[in-house]
Image (cartoon, rainbow, N blue to C red):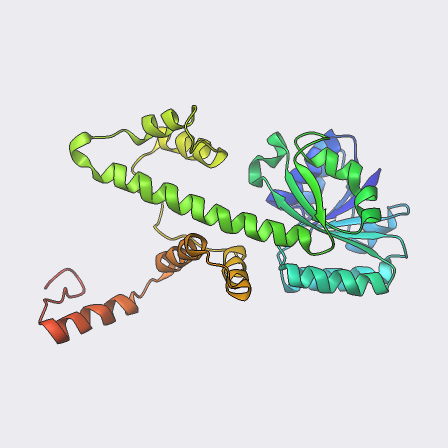
Length: 306
């Protein structure tokens, strides 16, 4: 089977590598020609000079997998692909698009006779070695056509991938997955900070996280990664206390509001990321001012003075 991969960044490039090692022929395109050349040389990927060139090198039914930033980049590429494709061809969006966008794109592409699959893709930079977790939304027909590709990307042919529902369901499932991820990360961060703060015990966080990896109820891949990092550096002085959010956490919080479902842990984890991103601290300045106004409490001046 031959397919095209558009977008060969950290995720897309490693997905090409795993597909090639799984026996799938891949035509690849990226705006960075040196990346295309490297993958062609190292993995036997078929290089292309443009999206149109990549499509021209496919045979029917043509499969074009997009690994692009969500929003306008993906929107523009989907619309640019339609004139290049024919009925029965398939577009896959493997990025972190909003599921509403995926539903809209899927409906529009269906009117053109073009299949669509939204693939929530988890695994990060470790997907090449461990395989990717793929949550896909599509019609039964499209899912069946994509089965060999999904099996090559997944940890094994019979696990790590699933056709979870109709178009939009894949990205919806991944959105909730990422919301849960926010909560798990926040919980580990708070717990480890409490351990570190108990200075009289001089606790070794590397030892404790390694201990928890074995038979503990909190063992997880996230804990594995944390334990490995803490073996090398427990102070983390070279890392700024700034945590970005990539969108899925916000969408999950909005979904909870829309459904009227209480999701305080997921929502608060997102809010904590917002707090880390606040470089001005204006809200805290207001709090300090109000505290001084009603109670005469001392105000710490910028620069450390009171």
